[in-house]
Amino acid sequence: MKKIFLILSLLTVVALWWCVNLNKQNNNNTQNTSNTTWNNTTNLTKKNGPYKFIWFVGTFCSHCQAAVPKLDKFYTQNSGQVNMELNVLDKKIFKNTHIHQNYTNPKQYSDYTHEQCWYVPSYVIIDSKNNVVDKKCWGSPTEDELKKYLLATNNETVKSEGTWENAQTNKVDDKNLDNNKQTMTEQKKLVKAGDTIEVNYIWTFTDGKVFDTSLEDVAKKADKYNSARDYKPLKFTVGAWQMIPCFDKGVVGMKVWETKKLTCQPEDAYGKCDASKIQTVKKEQLKQFEDHGYKLEKWAELPTQYGMIKIKDVQSDNVTLDMNNSMCGKVLDFTVTLVNIDEK
Image 1 (cartoon, one colour):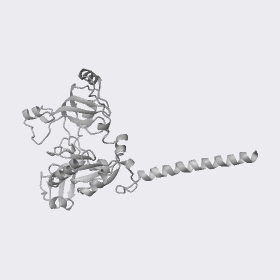
Image 2: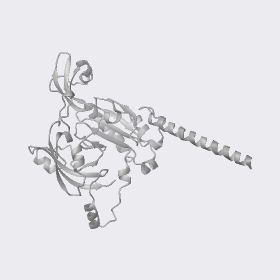
Image 3: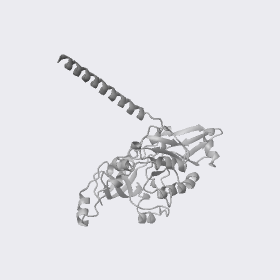
Image 4: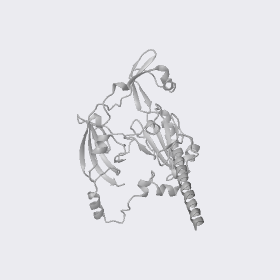
């Protein structure tokens, strides 16, 4: 009996030792995965996919203008299979393009890589957990690179995980509901953080002049109409830093078809003008711009990852740049009408 008890005790100790070491091994594996370098994709499995291609471009950039149609062709040929997004840094829109364009409050290269990049076009490719698996400052991907990442996906993963397609996959099907019942349901909903919403807006300054709007008739009356633009409600996710803080917080608690006036102070919009963002650099550091046909002269603007940067002054060997946002220090007014709530 004593021998049996001794054997059982030894087996228990061995089992405990095995579990502890297995747990350590799993933790190490997790740590190693999180420390994967930007371009090392060998350890990435389909559980980390599908991948999303994010391109940083500007309508002012001739290289972007030439590449966007090719990119759009790839997108349309593989519609429904690829995740792609254009972050248009000059906040305009590419005409006749089917890829989703984030132009109202575009992300930047540094938001994903934590590295500065002045040039457009540039891109990153991220997995479903927002880990960067490939990147390039100033460049466009080849078709083979796009296929490698964007077409090598697992459809089951897309449906089961919270990836970029979940807004489509998880929508509640209201087609069978009575129209009146649906209207009553919509009226009861209030916007909260995490909801994806659609709004119409009129952006004005304190003098009442219209700067931007999603409404075509308002744009025409204000002489702000752009025939290349598709006038439709602005869609964004509340609390996801896709909008300026004042706008993001101001829509919380709104209900469908409610109209609200938002007055945004500089510190809650594009910030105060920062003297430290006026910097002087050597001309030689801007040689790549000259190589692409941009003149280094006073008041000229250069296309960069931070949008258009204005040249404040030019000396024999130095150039002074103003990297403040053009909206810094301004009080902004928005008239916002909520047209739809797509709850998370």
